[in-house]
Image: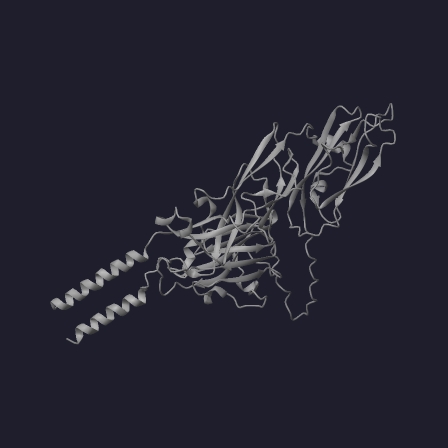
Length: 490
């Protein structure tokens, strides 16, 4: 090996090290509130007409307006200089509950308007004996970004930044002066009481509650309380009708008091109601003397969606054996039985992720229609490792996505799966969905395998080129090739 060629190799090595060092600058990403050009609050803010507190064991629902966040890229060396930060574009953010004092409240809806994201929190408050503050911590996380150069930003959350957004929400829970009625008391007040019947709600649900009378005086012993402090508490999908009031209500009461009510399914409820949705009914009673609280008639309720009627079997001819049931078996692969659609709603072939390239994003719909399966839980897996879980019955994303694939929507019979594999995907990644049915069985759908990227990219610099050295891997390869060719000519 000539001395000249050896010196040329050293020059290439020095250049490679120099460029590599420049390209490996410590870039970081952060989610933080955009301070200018937005009217969104700095912290989660409840709507003015929504409750900020509730009573022990009662239903709760409130909307919270969230801070408008920006995704910024910066060099660690310049993190104290705000003018050195680059605000990125075309990314998606998802808010989830990071921690909570208990699991009675969950996210039921995610809404976006021109100002900010809005979360609707709904559920049942815990039962307490003293004034208690129930705390929820919300966390925002980057779910995807269009420009694949910034794919390391996926997964960045508000908890990663010391001066980030305060996602704390506090709900005050007041103790209930009423004692919960025993089952014996429920049988006294609830007409034709049957535990299964009062707790299972369908479209024909109807439960009547009557107060009692003193047989000697023919006066009511108690009334159904309906003052500013306590009143009948129901979920939105139930309604209360007053059947009767006491014409001889004592003067101590401000108005005639209800002695009979009927709880029915709210036929005017227009929102989507998931099979298995849970809530409570609480009917507080007050004694005739207007000074003593009675029991609260309380029971859990669960909405049960009617099962679709099965079509009668076609009469079989003697030469045709009867049709076999098509319900899949436990742990069965139902890939060939589900219907898949692309983002436009058009049908697509099985295993669609076989053709998805790293750095590209795709969303596919899954329909269980015709499979006789009702999903209780949807889980998406990458190479067998859980990435995201959704339980439709509680409207809750029980686990935020931990990788580049997530279940973006889900009901008991359909779901949408969104994948945005990074442009530098290092290994083949098999994407599948596991469904736990309401029958307790597990079903698997194979969505295909995203092949590993053939090349990898270095750490990106800001879009204005502030940290881009101008030398990519291709440039380095061309330099090395030129030097080798120059040596061969000698």
